[in-house]
Length: 285
Image (cartoon, rainbow, N blue to C red; front, side):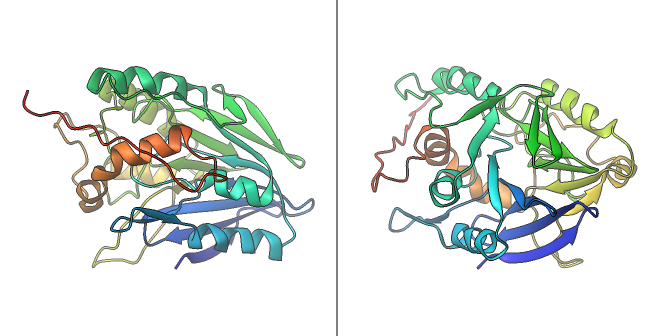
């Protein structure tokens, strides 16, 4: 069941975080208090691996919140083509309306995957808007700045609004180390440049991350600041190891890479009830 925590980012906007224990991922509902306009960032579906099923209990909790608060969904924003969980963006769009948007860098994803498995044909589809770096979106009277941060994948993008940065999986909490770069979509050098670009922002800028995991020393967390990240030094350098992220959940969720990538890239038409995904397997070198 989703864990919901709310916090006011200012007198004019509100951020509500929903945590999915199945996907270990945070979704955020960002709303303008006066108008009720809202954006939903990175909603995830529940994947039942044994039965090969997707259900949307966590997404339904988000939809219920939107309805209870009488919010008007203007945007459903993806910070990346996620490969460690299945997105619920298409499902929520069907329920609430709004435009589904992602970085225009998503167009580069097929080039990366084609090198690995030429027989798997992928092309992004189903998105309402492909966003450019520094593109401005309106949310009621508020402005959301799209900030391209490629490296983890060509489609990585953060969203900046009124003192808050929604960074997705590009950053972790200060005690968790650098973000994951073990994906076939990742480019370590570009990822390093993007991290440095983020960390040049003001110290007080609030950062909402996409993922955290329980640690014996502390409870689940989802918010930090640029100053805290910079002070920790942990996010300043991406290691050169073959698997750049040693966090526990990385090894557990990497097996979702191919099915999640296919669904999140092009199969979010929830009018369909069955998807035929390919599970490519290369034997030997």
